[in-house]
Image (cartoon, rainbow, N blue to C red; front, side):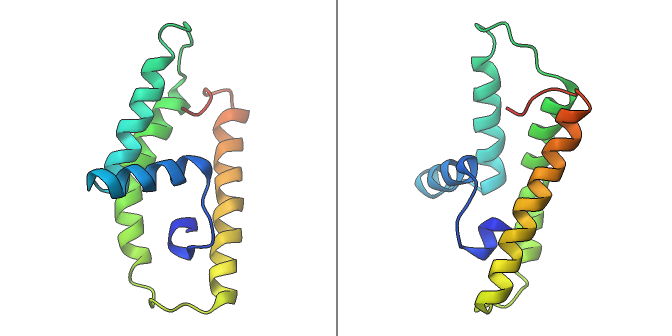
Length: 110
């Protein structure tokens, strides 16, 4: 929602968009690769990912491209109020989703 609204992104999405534009891969593919690389950096720290951490990587990496394709069905020139609504909804949903799996002690995000 944030990517499509084009009013700003979460920090990881900014990184992902930049890498995606540089290497020509899809947003979801870059998300998967960056997430796996970050998780690999946990090895020397002896940090163990939880099931929520792994699910975060897989679910978001696999579903982000189809969801972005659905968002592309919206008109190109969305009015500002609808872009603001998309941004707000994206922030709220991201917070709720993160809170659910972290609050359930299923592991931190990558």
